[in-house]
Amino acid sequence: MAVTKFSARHLTGAYVTTAVTYDSSTALEDETMTANIAELKNLEIMPPEGAVETINCAGTYAQTIGASHRTVGAATGVTPGYFQNAMMYQKSATNWKGTGTAVFIGDEQFAHVLSVGTSQAVSGTPAGTRYAMGDYASTGAISHNLLGGIRALYNNGSETVVVMLTNVWITKPGSIKPTGADGYFEFDFEFECLPKDGAWEFAT
Image (cartoon, rainbow, N blue to C red):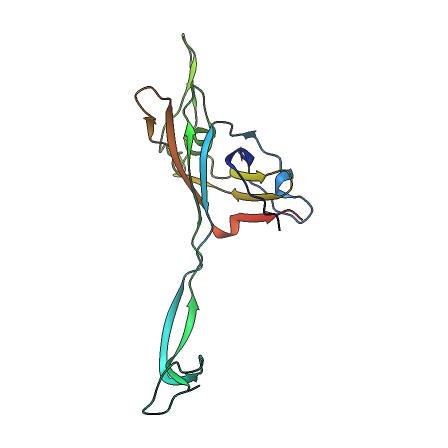
């Protein structure tokens, strides 16, 4: 059986500055996005972890695993084992998390739009836009966009997989560094969202 795979060129990253509303009539790849992230170098998305905790209880229970898995005196064969009574407790799921690297360019990028404070227009020559980090509004709320989303679209021509995260908090908007003595500059970024705000979709 032929097995298809996804290469880096099959990934299209995109972002949106508004919240995504999930519904059963709109495929995630058809959701309207603000722009593609053409400068994206790599992307790693970690789904929520459903960690569990073992709760040990009084007593034991018998569980037969298989033939000759233990010997009691001279007797061998299919004998039951006796294990501590226990139950599994599922903890709350962790957040969706993601990391990536983007090529640093001389313009605002998705990380700046989604994570920094309200911009300040700067006049003069050259004119520009100035951003503050960790700026707080008068209400005490952090003055940056917490409604936006990031989408990873994997499409190799025969299969499509989409991971969408909305209400994303970019926790690390970038450590700017060169790739080498003669290389370009790039920045790392990290982001996460609540379990309820992420979705993983396979096309049928």
